[in-house]
Length: 177
Image (cartoon, rainbow, N blue to C red; front, side, top):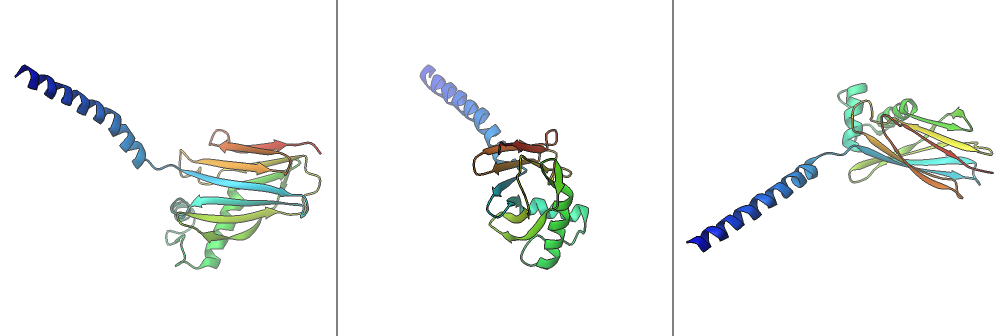
């Protein structure tokens, strides 16, 4: 009898320990993370800063429905010209690029849909002799408190990655000629 109680107590301890370890992990797996990723490459030959931004489609849809129109769908069923208009408008408000300290106009090229996210293509043209590139990225930060935006900047000779948050929403890369 004493032996059975020890086995039972040992099993109970292991079960409780397993639950204590597993429950937080299950909660973390169910937690939604809010982030976007931007790859910004300076092309010296074309004198352009070419950028590709990936944003989860459901997060983008939610922010568009909050800001513009509740009927917006960020998928292939929605009028793609209208959707491009919303994306361009939103990027112009939330994504600011400065070259050598001067704000530059974004040229929105378009988007494509991938599995879970929308891939947006933008560029800044006529970039001559850049000494610094600054990207302020506040995409989705007005809706999601925990939004994080990753920016990878590549000038050909210099590569740097930034994690942008509400408290630090600007990536600045200074480089020599």
